[in-house]
Length: 158
Image (cartoon, rainbow, N blue to C red):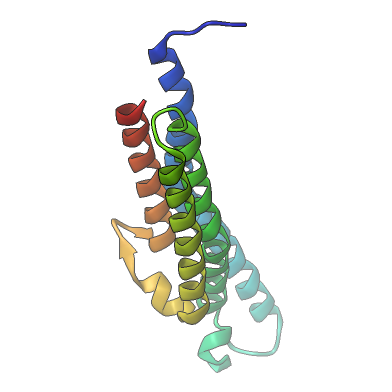
């Protein structure tokens, strides 16, 4: 069996959360690239057709269709962000927390994932994408925040 120091063990546990934080922040850059590609593809198809962009209803404009892609990606990743963060925190804190608190964290995360997903299903994509925190979509901000909190909890609890 390999033996590592307590500080090294903390670093190993913190690395996935740090990577999750970086991925949350880079997802907005990647999303802009995808958005640009989708908008360009739709605009090219519109230009090749006999229809003017001005004649398309608002929901079929290139920007509106690109919004749906951003919204869909966030709706799908929200439950994963919440649940994986909670599972990671509970796994990291297994030694220091009682099973009651571990199950409480997981149950709370499961409920929050369902509530978040229900919210995403009931909000208009344009309205959702219009609400940004520090320039990030709500889900991206939540993902970054969960990972920062997880790093702090791991460092404090272990």
